[in-house]
Length: 142
Image 1 (spheres, rainbow, N blue to C red):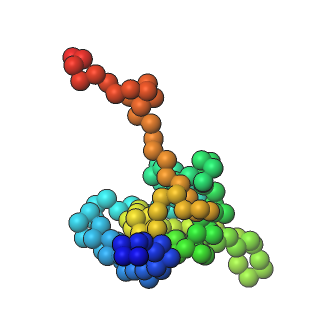
Image 2: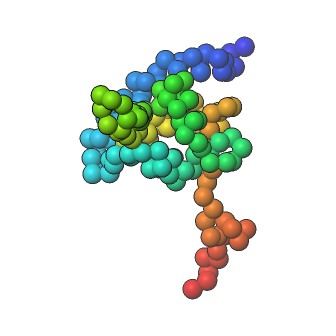
Image 3: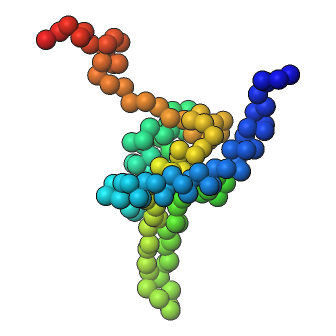
């Protein structure tokens, strides 16, 4: 039937083009917004950035580090893993935190299939004071 959508074909096309689009978005942000790029160092900073973006688990709960590591493994999440080396006879104990950037995460987020993917993540909007009241503020009020 003409005009009928084929979601399997659309998803396959998206999967094929997503890395290219992600590179384009990242390049565009670095070119036009270089002063806005920030390094996110450590689990807490990365999770806080994603939380501020509105990303949650599908249940509405906050994301966990285990989820982020799964996204890195399965979905190309832009993250350089941290490492912890316990003390050994050949070297002292050392830690190196995980690392990513705000532009890399933003480009990755904007190239996902949708914002409520089954088993992936959900985006929630932060309520504004007017939304918490249940109605828009009157435009006539001075």
